[in-house]
Length: 171
Image (tube, rainbow, N blue to C red):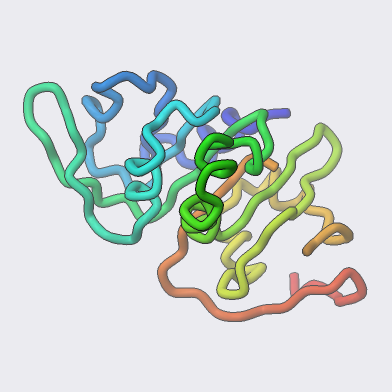
């Protein structure tokens, strides 16, 4: 469906792509603003993942010297639905899992033809989506199913914009 390729082409050197989820997954991080967890299926310790989604600098464990993460945008790319991520935590302690879910500002399910918004926080506007999504993905957005799996993103300063299927979009 082009999840990884679209983000790679859009962000190039601005993004740090993680595909190897071992203890040294941050070894080559160099203060990129965007972090992409690619082919994700709950490989990262749950508590650490919740920390990565917090809007504060975090000490990243690296092999030779730790460094603080200064990223402000996180994408999680997965072929699994969000509800299947961290299923043990979800089944054992739903309140804790909800904290993870609440840190995710939007979820988009991508098909070859369209992209469906499955979740969007109240504080994320359409302009925010336009700003962070690659153009080819943004243009595929279908608003008919608005309240999955491609992009989860944290935004620090956003404005409200409510969309219903009947609204005309401002672009």
